[in-house]
Picture 1: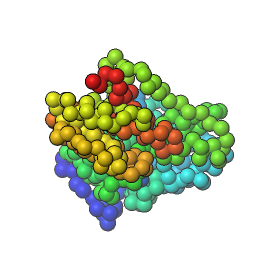
Picture 2: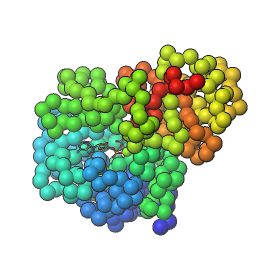
Picture 3: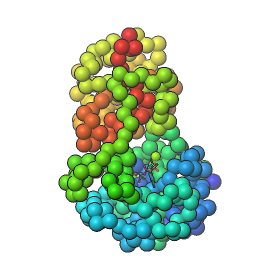
Length: 341
Ligand code: TXA
Ligand code: MG
């Protein structure tokens, strides 16, 4: 199959592909998604096949109006409506119970709930409206790899397997949406994202945060064993804020291979770096770092001499919580520390 690049004036053609049951990757403000008609069982099955995704991991349904949600959700609680009003379009995905038999088991993974998302990206809202159906969209990467933040990342993982990719340049946010489960009495954040716990609590009051955090001193028996997410080929080491970068640089200089160094500009500029340190700038702040993280991890995957990556930690609050969640998974919870001599 020839994977076509659709430009922004070709959304009509991309919508026709969706209507025909084909797969088209689409941009959002967070990461690129792998789109298919959410009401077409065969098309949705192909999404799992193309990604190599386990079939019990349910998909997000992307909508372009609250009416589209009403068609499928059993009911929309008042608090969910308030959040939609405040954050849609935007990076908040809301899980709601759905009516029976309105969406296939393939979409729901057999659950009685569905995750709805209204992305803040006009070309994709146009795509959904023109296709006339909600569009499922997991991140458009091979399962286990960092999510794609450019059309080129999608092409790298999925060319030959999908009909096309809508190219809207690099995504703005760079980490996936906040996933909030509102199908139970007490709302829970299942995945942190750009819409923060505090912002949600401002609208609906206290909510829970459900995350398994690998402790700072907890070294997994086999790196990466705990997580199969966002995993580049090289081992990633998280460089905590209280770690002296000079120690990191000294360690890099003693390695017999290249080491990817992901840090803010101010750190890269100040350090005098050994030849085998391959720099990747995370920019000037946690917003930049979140937008660039997956691109950096992917770039080092294409450099076989890079056998380790050191990456800067940020305070795990607000957007930093989402950044650290993804970095932790890519590192399998491993921090630069005593073992790095
Ligand atoms: O920013 C995003 O959310 C991107 C863009 C493309 O919209 N999409 C995305 O999709 O990250 P995906 O499939 O890679 O991640 C969706 C997450 C998965 O962890 C999935 O397990 C969870 O949401 N999820 C989806 N439906 C669920 C449900 N009904 N109950 C619990 N978790 C659910
Ligand atoms: Mg994903």
